[in-house]
Amino acid sequence: MLRPITRTLAIVLTLPSLVLAAGPKDDEAKAVAVKVTTAGASLFDAKDAPALAATFTEEARLEVTIKEKDTNKYNTEVKQGRTQIEAYYRELFKSDATYHAKNTIEFAKEIAPDLILFTGIFETDSQAAEPLKLPFIQVRKKNGEAWQVVSMQVFVVLDK
Image 1: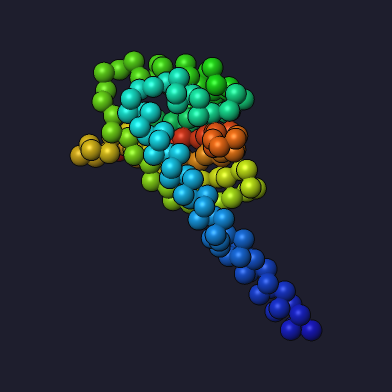
Image 2: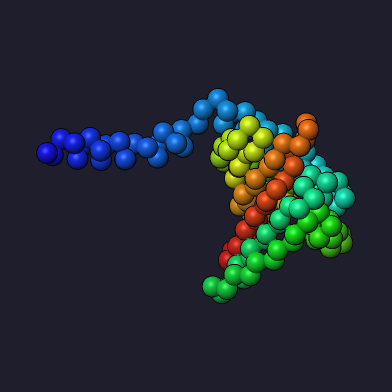
């Protein structure tokens, strides 16, 4: 009686590693993620709000969650659709700041042949002594030859 339970438990405990194990499709997803985020960092450096917004689908969603310094309070700003996303970037780029943006992809997964999910760290100024490191999650959909953002979440933690 104990043997079937042990076998079932072994199967259940190994399933997550089988599901999350990177395969050839996930290597391709990571290559796509690196390519699109490298291009996005260049657009960010150029402060090109219209071009950045064009990397999103028309109905895309951008969420920026900010943890305020010295508090436990989190605020989430949501932009829905390419028009609101472009306006968000235009406002962000009004400052005189110079950017040296960089993305580091930590995980990538093909969800379907035309849909990938990836996570990483975005640095607005990778040349700064202590660059601000912003974790992010993106879901991208293949539209022709382009991989457009369907959903992006960025997390800003200002405790340091």
